[in-house]
Length: 380
Image 1 (cartoon, rainbow, N blue to C red):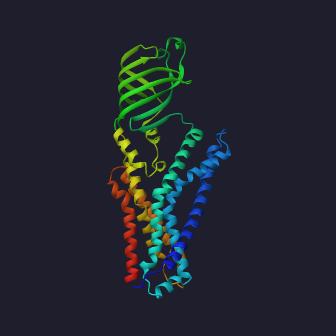
Image 2: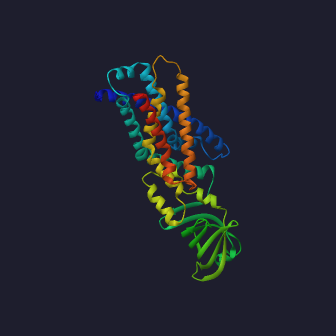
Image 3: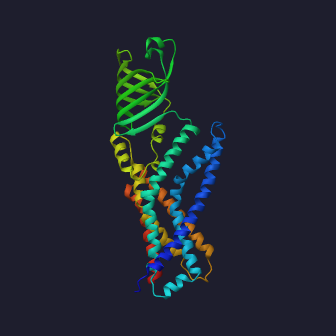
């Protein structure tokens, strides 16, 4: 078997990289236009949101959808590259020179593998910063959310606005309700029943004046309030009161609390393992993040599979008809794999199938299918 030369390998890889970047740029431009129009529609109801901020938010949101489009860009650019090489008889000449299909596929597959590794190690972490900034601007300017929730190694921290009743504050404030906020900390969470353990609550006015502190053994979220048990309330003056039960009004729901955690897309690949351990230590379910983490790990294999599938549908004699059928087949394959991946990841997130099966099986199935078709084409 003739060994493929670095010059030929570089030519094939360069041609594919150019097509990949052009297609990816075109797709991202279209996505940016649609996202910006949607953000303008949402911001039209908020007169305090300037247009420059909307355009900035559209750019910050781009990595979120862009990473979803990467497999499609890899597939469609590979289809176009193989069609282009076949139409110009370049692949015919390469095959006539004695090279096997695996030899001229290798440089293009290597590009897909490198691009997959770059997505995990570079593109995803940089995109996570952009997406995190977008979500922060969205909460502040479009949703006007004042509640803030975070999970750290020490447990759950929650900040919410509240009107503090007059009998809960110092004597000079007894004439009226005091507008302020509370900061709630819990060391552990029983997520199924939504019970917080070892709870500490700090009360502040809007001008950040400390009012009191409440310590409770447990706090349960129900009926638009936190129900605290075995409470000790420490006043600012040094006195304290013990209460068997105590209610802290809240506008938060369980769904809002869960959704306000960092979304998987806003977490860097490098930080995901530590964040998953933190959530599990605190008591939250981290299955969704685990599925997302493993799906990121499977991206290089998925990109190689896309290139194999592209070669299987686009390598045909240059004079044969059926270009439309080729493109339609490629689009159909792309959407089938996208649907299968989304479906299995949803099953994995709901713990109906193992995490590894949910995250890795779409890439593995696509790779084995493309490999089988190419072996049939090459070896008959």
